[in-house]
Amino acid sequence: MQRRTASTLPAESGGGRSARGPAARSEGAVLRRRAVPSLPADPEEARDLLLSKAEECFERYGITRTTMDDIADAAKVSRPTLYRYFGDREALIREIAMRRSRMLHDRAHRFLETQPTFPDRLVEGLLYLAEKGRKDQFYRLLMRPETITIANEVLMDPEGQTVQFYGELWEPVLSKAAAAGELREGLDLKAAYHWLAYVNFVLVGWLDLDPRNVEWHRSMLRQFVVPAFVAEGGAPGRAGTQTRGQAAPSSTSRARSSRRGTEGARSS
Image (cartoon, rainbow, N blue to C red; front, side, top):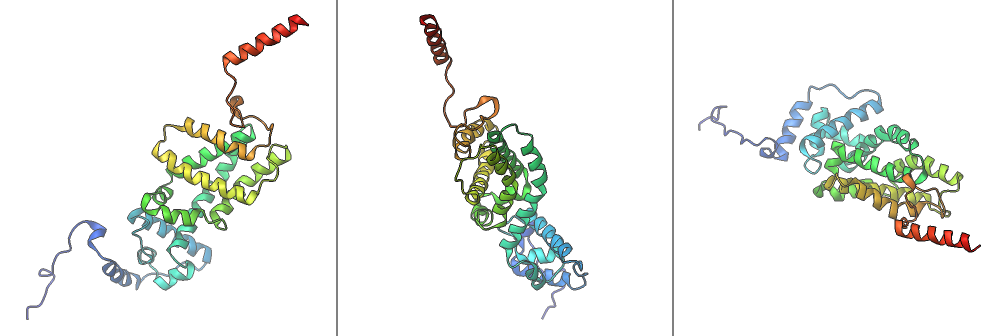
């Protein structure tokens, strides 16, 4: 029997990752992990390292094609070690999404503080968060059509960390509005945070499809989001924008009102 030397072995086809199946990747991963240093002793540092390696894999291979083996291989740990920190791939995705959100928290809070009115904080804050999410590489991957179901499960869980993050971000805004009498009475705050997260989730997709039409999105938010939060007679938005979705009076109607006022003054 002829012995198969390196020169007689069949060459692996090109095409990068697609040429290798999961079994081949797993075998290579096991060999590469054997003589590798362990994770940092500090649990938080170890988690951060694993999350960073997971992000690298998701950005390199895509979210749907990345396996736990790929992440363990990149982090140079065994699969059982990875599973001790994260129960499954969805848990990793959720943690990465939360970590990326928290990196934005302080900047977003400072931005909200620059807005002059409560309606402006709602509208401009949602647009700001959506634009940042649209430009974030991980969120862009998560919002692709093939991963939208995963994104919905991870980001829209009412008891999940993402909705909790939105609560932390928007609570000071809504509390300030309530103290000023600008917040609609009887608002379910927990449901409000969940809905704001959902609106932001939708906005990311809208802006990605049509990033130039920001004014249209702004107008829709003022007409349909602001009235859900602002008390009757609350402060108007930027440049006197109506907060109850009513059209501003036209120049003709203003002229008629002016004439009626003048005629009334003359008759008196």
